[in-house]
Image (cartoon, rainbow, N blue to C red; front, side, top):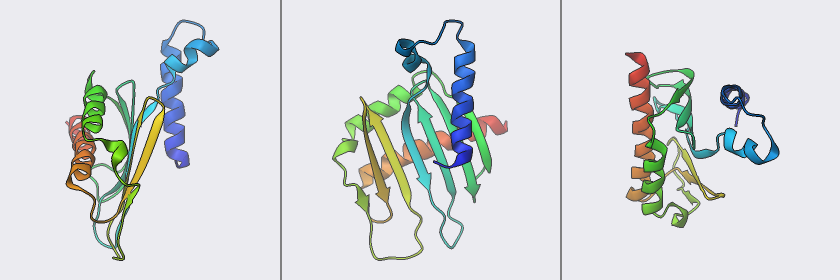
Length: 157
């Protein structure tokens, strides 16, 4: 993760911790600090490919950083509707995310790469999608992309 995103995550943790009136102990600190569930990063290409990163946490929050050719450049964080993350988790489980290959690639140049990861019950899988990924993986990437677009549109209004 880059420094900007790390700072946003630290701020998100601080805000969450400040809202709590109870003392943080070793046992309940894990309940306060949000856990990353999804991570998606799209890389640039030589053309106008959108480039951004997004992290979705178990407390229904999202941190986004848009770089180029996106609707919103810069960093933003957003609280999602309750149940949004739970619904995404079910979609990833039903698609058997952990059974996908670790990478889909080919000897082709100038395509954007999508990195996508999912964490469930302490197990994390990260996939590099450069070329020829299965449609079911593309669909999961689309769920995250659609979520980002929807949340950016809500902020813009």
